[in-house]
Image (tube, rainbow, N blue to C red; front, top):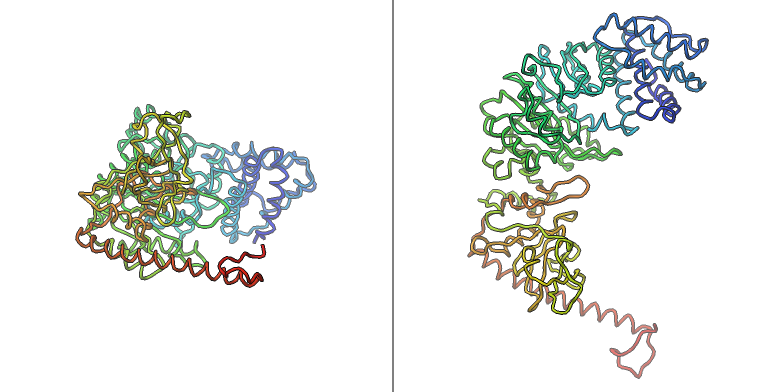
Length: 638
């Protein structure tokens, strides 16, 4: 069998030599195009001995490669080998002795593969290819870790007689994963890929894995679908997809779609467009599994309309949110969406939400424990504290039809006592913050008509996140001050006593309760802050403040926060937080007891401060020799 370490060494030498001349992506594609063409040639038993590279000039190598391609074209007429030959030609004709040596090694290594070693070697080379594309920072491949593909294939419920369709198959990672199932039975695939070179290379790779690639097409899936039947797209048993990210789509083109694929809403991004296309490509008992970025699961219009319609049509079966595992690459945080046109009766009217946090994984092998945990939780279809929740449609409606599992699942902390408290609170009857309070965002000073003439102007303290102290107080000394002529300028963000101030970006757990700061003192919420004004007739403001400041509140805020590197809170998400209803009589009793305890704490802290000061003076007196001064007036040597 091929020594993969040595193979990788020569491969990287070849890529390093070529990337400066042809560009990194073109070099990698060209090299692997050459490799997979040789692999397919070997599999077809075109040649029994390697090409004598050392005795042939580079031009002869390309001629031999073209002869192999012509031979393969007769056996695989659905593959346009010219797409691969174009990128491989410059490599074969390279006159560098180092390139020639590396290619000679690759040819010798592939030529030495035996029939029984072909599949294992092909798998090793494929894995090496995906890693190479990641390490050369190409964005068309391996946006997600392989464990995503393993889970997606695991929940697909694929049977050998079915046809699985991928509308953006790239290098065919799901197809390759399906071909490695233990039963070793052939799989039937179909799909479309917009990049012709990638499409052709994937066809070759699939044939090496004994997977018929006749159902793979080259073209724009959204603009010109090629798997069609009359005025409808072809329907398949299973659809699996890793949609491209970052695509922005024109509304007019989708609204005029002749195949009626976007009936659940007109998407603006590629993710929901491919998912809707995939749903229209499902048979009546079909199933779709797709990766989707977490942002698409919580964004409002138009994504919210699409989610709402999918939920109300009872198509969403489950969503599995995976943790962001340590990696030198930084893929966006994503989840796995499972659509089922044939949901079992026991699962109708609800969605299984699964949120796998890093704390639930094996510390030594976190990645290895994700896949079995995800598959087992989905198969069991049951609620587990801190892991899974079966959510009804009515509950999803209160969350704006969010499909992000962490919005419904409370992550349990390490402390058993805190976990017990959180569980107890979460079982109490609840009410949305939006029903008891007005939530609004702060504003940057550039949004106001300020003045530099202080005389006659109104001074306003415009707060920022750093002005919120850890003890819940607002520090006005360091706050930015602006001057306005009309108080109406800042009325929308002005803070009155008992208003709650919450940081909405970065440190999302910073919170304060506004109080009276003196007559004429105007305080307002600046950028990256949220103001919560509680209706005292419906809920005690102090109770909500204490609740959000507690471990339970921090868990709630963490659940609804969004963002990958910098976490953030939106007005809508804060409004949808469900908090337990509070008995006013019990809260008054708590307030009196808490106030008494706070006073005792403050007295103790003041006493501790005095004792620390006295201890410091005793230390200073060690170095003072002026006996004429009282001890409390002696100066230090300094």
